[in-house]
Length: 341
Image: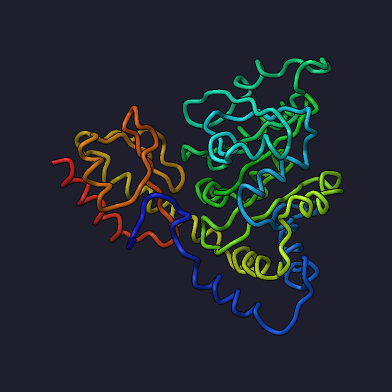
């Protein structure tokens, strides 16, 4: 596979991340997060997300989301999210199995929750026969490629806190959102009331590992035990920490995300006026959603891998990444034109 528009996970690791891993592969370091790299990374996370932020490394995005939600809930609680949310559609039921919570979903046109979606679901408080609403979960970027503004996030956080609930953010593509908004990470998380988030890097140039970032000390009180019991504790934690140090300290996260977003914008511009093509969502990150004719879709997918998002409507998802180039997009668009003819 030379190029892929199927997922930003299909890209490899950024060369500077690989160099950081090689540099960390020297001498001896204590294990299980007691190494000097993890200590330095903890300081960096606090500098980015606020002085109360505590970051914990885990193996993957599913682990990050599930453990993050475990830190916020008891098994009798309910988690409210969009129907399209990763925790509902793509975690194979892991959030429900390992938290014990009921996941309650609501439909949205663009993947974004707003208070009017949630208020009708806030019922049964104190009634022993109902799961108790405890978490509002959003994805930033959403699964439809759209981005929440700080004001939209704050409105959700305010609603959650008024009801004694938490706001969780699935931040697997948080860097792309910050790049689109041209804001620091703290401005779209801590400052607007997010309580906990999973912060990913493997979609944006890292090789492995994700992080759970808890923004209040009380939430982190027992998280070490939750992570260990959930089998998500790295022994050689320095290799995750070294990646995050390279990723966060030198602006690599932003550089990569900006490039991926720019490539998606370029792709959208190239296909905007093609006959038979309808772009279905705002292009605010590194994703382009479009409807293309079925015959053209069959021809195109023979040459370029991508996912069919909705078989019924013919909607597809094209993802760009930090190593997508204009030449890749140009070849793809030329093949798309041929498939349409």
